[in-house]
Length: 341
Image (tube, rainbow, N blue to C red; front, side, top):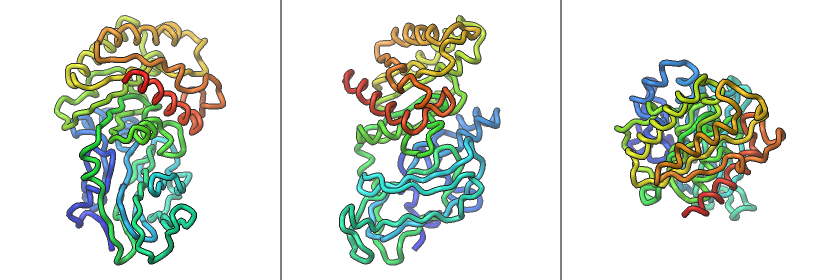
């Protein structure tokens, strides 16, 4: 049995995607953005590639199958690895994938018989909820979802319809760079902690820019996280220009989503804290974000320095957290949000 583009309800097996497009070759492409935003990202090749990656997206279903096989195709990548994370009944069970991306096989298999977990063995017809998070930093298309022949497969989309939704806006760190596990990224962790749907709008290299907010997108988030600033600090020559961009961004965001609870996270620690740029030191940029975002009643400020331990061993390159750093990020962000409920 194959679940592919010929299956009428195959899109319902995807979670945390804005849409699931059917490509010319019949493969399924779960996307995070609208066509309008894609046209903006296409202006720069690195942004195009990063926007095509299914960061935060998963396949979720309930089945009595003893295995699931994904028929996949990996295209471009933002980082040269591609891993899938398997959860069974919300327990993290296994990571499967490849590094480099070109070594990823055409099909990836997941054994769902884990006797230690719930006693399931082959052919026992025990139903389980299966969640597979897709590679977050590689453009991966799904040609088909293949459960065991004769098995029962049900989608979870009806349950998801009644959950709250979180929109995560940000740069490469929000996208999940540079965790190896896709479910390590803090938006995935936070969504799992809170039991809500999530749409990850993180794009590596992004800055405060109102053009990344599409007023025509069919979304109504209950919670929004905003985490920009590090690229602005590196890139901008003028503090006044940065302040203008930041203010315009929050003006548009709060106008589009007046009912949402918005959490603005200032930049996390980085190894170049003591190096001044054209805009000064990074701590000065944090203060500017706090002052600008803090003027909006629906925006709550969260100190990014509390998110990840301020030590190099929690980062891959002094800027991007590793998997352990992201674990701290997710837990600390959850704590800060719960304080402000």
